[in-house]
Amino acid sequence: MTKIAVIRCETVSEVCPGTGCFKAFNNRTVQFKDYGQQTEMIGFFTCGGCSGRRVYRLAKKLKTNGADKVHISSCMLTKKYPSCPNIDSIKISIEAAGLDVVEGTHH
Ligand code: SF4
Image 1 (cartoon, protein in one colour):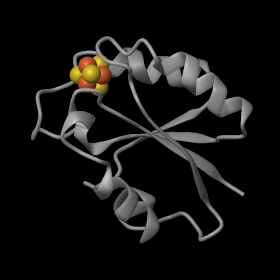
Image 2 (tube, protein in one colour):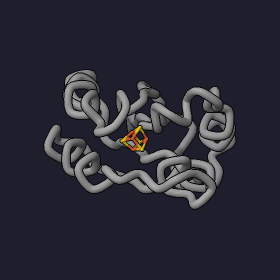
Image 3 (cartoon, rainbow, N blue to C red):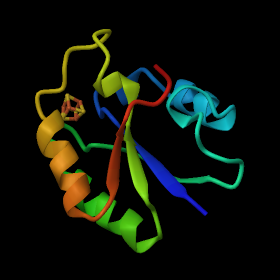
């Protein structure tokens, strides 16, 4: 069984409850379209604010709990919000914890 998580922007989380990400996952659309119904989302977390201080610690915990992949939320990638200046180091931190990175959620 595949286990996934989503990381999103701490700043954007002030105005977004994550509905778009969950809707896409629950309906298996956009970046979640290739997952079967057995796939579980076991984590949904923010970076902890610039520069992503929380990422490695939580990614390690997700790995311990059996996660395979972390999706980078669309808010961190879209032009709708200011670009994340730490996106590269955030990806490196996730991979260093032993997880695959997938770009995007509902866009
Ligand atoms: S590091 Fe990137 S994702 Fe995290 S708060 Fe800053 S801009 Fe948002």
